[in-house]
Image (tube, rainbow, N blue to C red):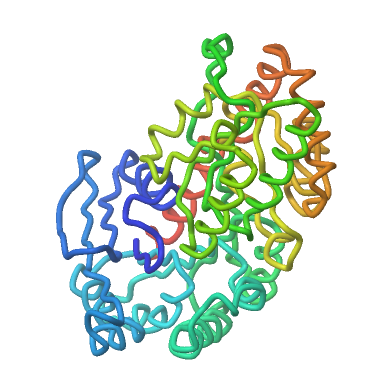
Length: 378
């Protein structure tokens, strides 16, 4: 497996796909980037090769080389894998080079997001260096390889539909939670009214959440919201903390910072309901956030945006309330309504539904089938 942006112990790549393959007899190597060079075998018997990722202020030459994927291609070539499974759009630029290696390997491209839409929505947040040397060439490469590599994987139906027009060997492997619903935890004492888990930024709805907490405070309800994740921008972090200071929200909003994924479960267990409030844009109309499934694994009703997959899941399964993600008053009313109706019975229903439909075990056979098909043709 190869990654460029994702961490080497990433939820989908390592905790789900790599572990599934390893426990079914495959020798798995994950090559990617980190703060320093490492090469080690994990306790799950998965080899991890971490290349040092250079920043512009460290070495412009190494940064330029990495933008052309030279180091990761050479490392991948040297391990001589039967199947190369690519996990970031940037790696599309070396996909055909990998296919042309003398030992004729198979290549899978696993798209975690709708990358063309992502660039259109968020190009202002990127440097021109990154846009022209990384983003545009990568998206062009994605378009070029779709009908030339062995298998394409998407995490939801819209990207899968786009891929299938180019290549019939396309599968949807949903990014369902690996947390298994456990009803014995239902009676655990709740500490937080609402939980949000993910990057803390405007594009994830943080300012809307702050407004909703302020609205509730004016209505006489002191909410306690736990935010699990990192700030994605120092500028936004300053702005968020300034609002908290001005509105005296220190007791209402709690930040954990980045924590290991195994520890997130403790915060889920201690929360009553959850937020998934992404602003409306092209990307958010297509993505299917994993957090929805993690919330459901712990029986947490969801307050989500009124469009896309989040709305579909809430509406189809009656697991929360969808609202206009630009209307803080709607969010406040939804929070107060769900808290009024909070019950162990509802949480148990959500857990049962998740166990039946939305856990990673349901997706494992799809991944193994792809590897079996490709492996039998090598």
